[in-house]
Length: 132
Image (cartoon, rainbow, N blue to C red; front, side, top):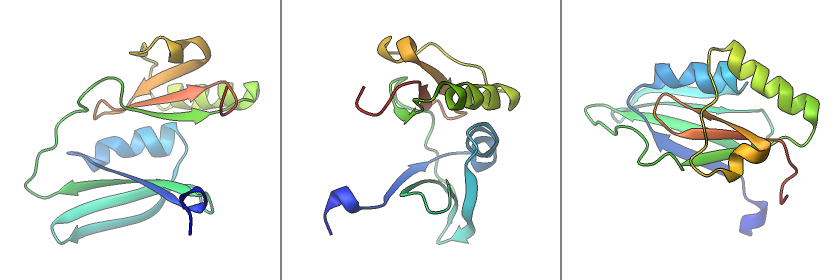
């Protein structure tokens, strides 16, 4: 299997799974695909969309502190070229209680809107096609 055909899991540690869920589930609209508790001293949740070739995994290691994102330029970027889908995604984030933040790199503010999750990692909703 070559990498261009691979399924992608983005895995990241957190100190508070419960704080992240409203951002990714309610704000961004991800489904909870799987959860686990106390598996070798880890708790975790996988979020995504059934059948999509990617998902996000957040884990908490018991007794371990990970802290906040190291910089404001740690991004996940979602390309939404259709104006109505882009507007709906922003409306959903705001309705879930999340406000946009200014992007660290001004490039992302030209066609996108950036939101910061409770751990300080950022998600850009970009009103452009992939590769634009």
